[in-house]
Length: 270
Image (cartoon, rainbow, N blue to C red):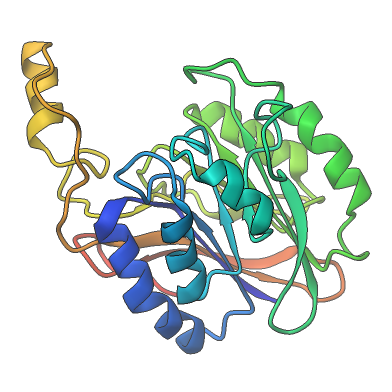
């Protein structure tokens, strides 16, 4: 299978880049399945139902969330009616929606997508992501009903993301980090056959401070005082993420490439 994962969609610039380019990339790269993290698509904080529809209509097969999962209040209801949107497994036990689900790819094969939130340096105390993910991996072994498995690790610490990669090695097709909005250069296939990337980066304007218009973050760094709200940068966005090819028999990764399309970053494609 050919699978693409795109990092956090950031504001209007990110949504526009998704709408304008996702159909082209699916066709050009012959993609079987696309996962998009929509965590910051609505004003940089969370995802509204309307903007989730925009990403899905552009061609995403699944949209993941993150620590801002329910910052947009209508997502509380929307996620119950739209199974293609998943929230973190280890979010509040009373939160709506699911943290893992089997999807059917364009070629008819089943793909497991799951998301967990990290604990290190995160502002809220989430449950242990490792123990939350373990029963999901046991229930959906690669090569069984799940022809592929994609794990979105939404957290701050690179060490925690790397630990999750090794924890899932041999049991997932791809483990990819999100949340920090900066793409890393360590795309690799781990010894057990799991594709890994510490952070996919964001789908947003990189002439910014992690997707936000530069003025207010810089003011706060320099003066220590806030003046205005953060607003997403509105320039041309780069679609950042990762492409992985899996073995049809085992579900393990046979090839992985970090991808960047459009905007300020140097282009990279399969």
